[in-house]
Image 1 (cartoon, rainbow, N blue to C red):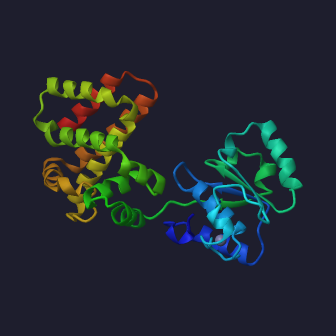
Image 2 (image 1 turned 90 degrees about the vertical axis):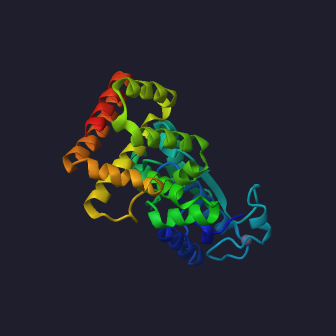
Image 3 (image 1 turned 45 degrees about the horizontal axis):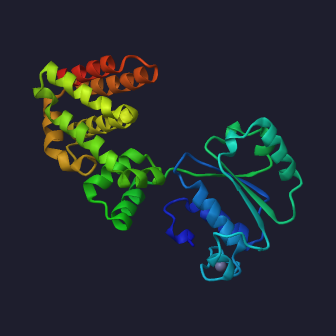
Length: 296
Ligand SMILES: [Zn+2]
């Protein structure tokens, strides 16, 4: 069950689907391209439901025989094939698929879900209608988290900033206990780092090694924090601050650090990420980073 009305964002794609169904201009093959969590599978499933719906409306009716049985194979007018991770198919598999797309069985509609459609053979790309999923506006994501998931304001802000337009990611973060833990760790460190001795910083680094796998999340959180500091220093506006529940510390940091210092910290965060990717010693990278933060 489901409806396009419940989908956040993607209005252009939804409009396209509605028109294609109503005007009987449905193509045999579509590529739905977008990053992980952006909603490709959901849109393809709703598109399929709409095609099979007995009411032939622009949106599944959720009442007819077909809509109610949407989870089971149904003998409707269309045969629907949804192929996830199509961009990971081998060249041979793609060539086999190409034959199907070139001479599709009657009433077949094929959905190729991709994160990077350029990886598909050009011959496949040119025979499919491309539907590109775009980033969803922060305001829409935040609204969804607060209204549908009852996430408190300050947490919704962090999850939204972190998700960068990706609804699936925002929901995943909002549901994640672990994300809260990582966030708490980062906040505690950023609050007190200026009063910490080197030995305490080393301890903090050791503590983070627990989160080694999520270290990029941890660094992203620190980055959001310093973007807040920079934003507040430059504008004195509170409504754009992501860490709203830590505003007292953001203000203090903005007072303490120079523009150059904050820029330096943001640069060293980028550097740290790059170095970790290049497998430079973890403790070394993090100690260097924290010293830069402490000194600025
Ligand atoms: Zn229906």
